[in-house]
Length: 209
Image (cartoon, rainbow, N blue to C red):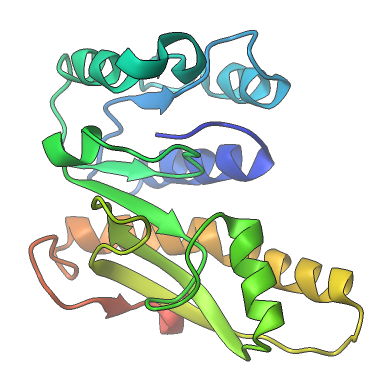
């Protein structure tokens, strides 16, 4: 599930789709909370993924508003799947994660900053953190607070005093890792090296850096 706002969302879905060719996992659907014509970024995303094997579901959060999640659940009821992964999904789920096991890709370490990716990076810079990373965590009612399934870390080097350059450096490190990280997590779920019912989070850093 994604909002499909930009290149990052497409690259993640593209990587997961490519991974299904080498690991025993199937994408049952690709979901976007924007319909065609609502936003240029998501229009490009929907155009890019239309030739994938997986069906595309679009339910407009703008159009449905209060009944949005009910309509999403109605659409999802037509499919048989084990879990949902949120990649660049810019909404807070209220009902979906209580109906289906849902996991979110978040650009921070467990116990790290919460919020949107730009908010996370700004907090890292404000606190002069020398390490950050990525995690996939279970979605619960409290935002970015569910149990961590997997994570990876990277060092932050403040080689420049220019805040914009510091921001871009951290962002580039996140982008460079996130596709490999999410695909490795999915691969290890299929091989049962990562267990969804385990309380133990798995550090994937050594596989990625």
